Amino acid sequence: MQVLDGKIASQSVKEQLRQEVSQLMAEGKRAPHLAAILVGSNGASETYVANKVKSCAEIGFESTLVRLEETVSEEALLNTIQNLNNDAGIDGILVQLPLPKHISEQKVIETIHPDKDVDGFHPNSVGKLVQGLETFVPATPYGIMLMLEHFNISTKGKHAVVIGRSNIVGRPMSVLLSSNHAYGNCTVTICHSHTANLKEICLQGDIIVAALGRPEFVKADMVKPGAVIIDVGITRVNDATAKKGYRIKGDVAYNEVATVAGAITPVPGGVGLMTIAGLMKNTLVAYKRRIS
Ligand code: GUN
Image 1: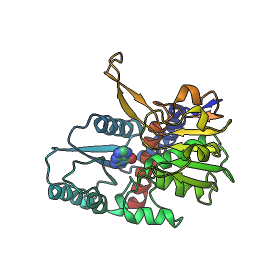
Image 2: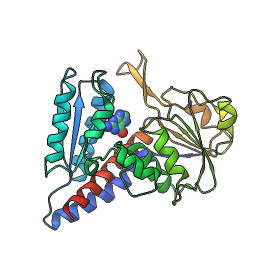
Image 3: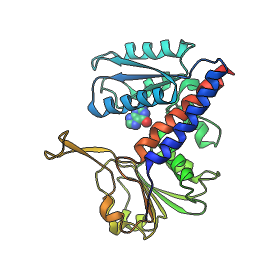
Image 4: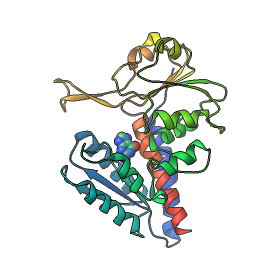
């Protein structure tokens, strides 16, 4: 059984990026610049955004964190995005999701200029992804592809079962795994809350991507021996014995599934780190397109 260590894989990607940025600096170019917008103070979102900003610094990117009150109006948020769209010094823009209920996530996503859409959530980016055109791939599915590549996991002709159909992970993941490229060419089944006989389908999976957001949902009796298990879940579960009062749980019951699987990503220390690596790669691409 192989542990797919996100720390090792993400550090390898980030080191390549760091070297590339250092070369650009040596040529007298400006640094790539990512702008992140955080609305309110959701604990998990705070952590994710802080990690994104920290990774920028490690690689040599500039970053700007724009913090807005939970009560900010939709109009004010859209104006902030427009200003960043028009700012020649900004290469990539991300608005951390979820947003407060009074703000339309769709409007926010569609306001980010497609050239700066490093999260890959704009319909323009999604359409290109589905058509197999070069575009910004959402960071988590992109990070998972980078992880498969790092550990040289063959996917061609395999049956991949994706659990979850979100726009952020499940749906783009299913497109990537079924696409015709080095770490695609899978036969893909997408499962969701209305799927009948989920267990039987999972048991057919050579690869399972669990992205439904239900802690320890995938159990050992749902997994084919030797399968590759990619756990996208990161749910905070209250635990009075933990230092912070909660523990992070994946969508996979790690200890029992690890006894059956051929390879598995840990949580934490797996896909989450790769998400940041994917975002950083997208930001460098956005930058290169803009300075060329
Ligand atoms: N919320 C959960 N995942 C993501 C992500 O990849 N990007 C943004 N912007 N928000 C998220």
